[in-house]
Image 1 (cartoon, rainbow, N blue to C red):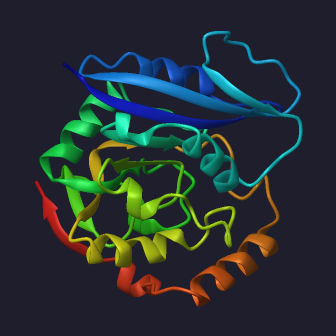
Image 2 (image 1 turned 180 degrees about the vertical axis):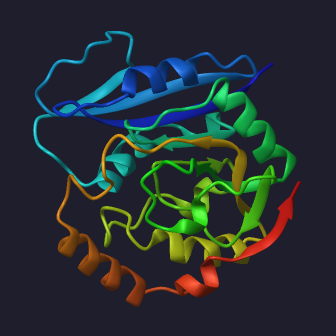
Length: 235
């Protein structure tokens, strides 16, 4: 029998998005049984009726508050992996099967695909490194797409909504993952392109920054120079 993957995505319906193509790509997996749960924010109707929508919100809510609600109403024990995705990335062909094959090969409990060279990138560390397939790291970014294996779900969720946009999670996650003796990493072999919308275009930067400071003040975390570190790279 196939392993099971839960995809949770958030669509900003009132701006240009790629949710349809992302959903089609993920649904085309040959190796995994994929269930998708999308939350739509906005008033515009979706073009593709095949998108599996579980909730529609007329006004915006913080991303990780929404994710907690969706994950909290789902029996996560049913899945081998949970994939969280935004709606504005371009996935390479056969993305999910290729990505999870590398994630499995290198035993990453928490992982993300690298970003293509032409993407908007907040932290250069996540840009694709040419010539390697993957790297074990102390940093996995909160978006635009990341995956959690079944053994990482109980220690990473529910998300702490002191920082409801998720800012700062990626500096405390490595401490949590390390304490559980798990591995995390970035898959360079199947990078995603994130060039449609600038990442901070849809929420107030100062709010998220203040929430991040409050969140990190209350928990063990790495400084950026400690987090942006390759433990091992794989050819």
